[in-house]
Image (cartoon, rainbow, N blue to C red):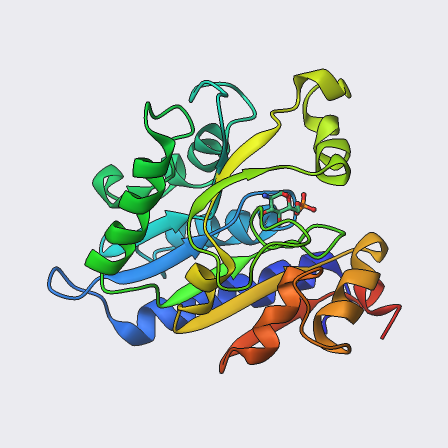
Length: 243
Ligand code: GLP
């Protein structure tokens, strides 16, 4: 627990830097990161960029896999997760674009795209550190309440709460928010060697309580990480109001 959202970002970025540097990645041994979108990780991304500029962190031998992407939104749409990642992280660091993986929500065969994504993660040797945010309803990536806890990368229809929460990015116009997304499954994230979940703000307090103080439930998919050997929740004071 950190006092503020900014302190959460600082802690998370330092943690990521330490993990990558301790691993000392090379051409033969890439560090594999799972990455989230959303407003929560923005502060962490800003700090990772600062570390890169200060010369204390390189992404030269890092591979990344993003959690999710909207279906049907053009790749260059300002709210696509491709645009988000490029704008908020990738264009500012020394990562090789060939090492960046983001699901293609415009693929002709979406099922094939999802199966191929799982295969690429496997081919990369699995994920060392998966970083996630959560929705106020406790969803991780786009694993909405009711998702199977053994789910893999697949197409999901977004529920009304998530569409409502994301409307702020689409001129507050519900009809503009995509209704489907491709997302890694709960089990895809559970397979990572280590998981780090960032939770900030009073509107996430109930989700944090459900995540760690009640039983594992597919209605709060983030609660699955109680079963993961090395998951770190980093929360600000506000998010702990229900603990
Ligand atoms: C979306 C994303 C999630 C993210 C969530 C919370 O649903 N698919 O990965 O965790 O938003 O976003 P925010 O961090 O803006 O609250």
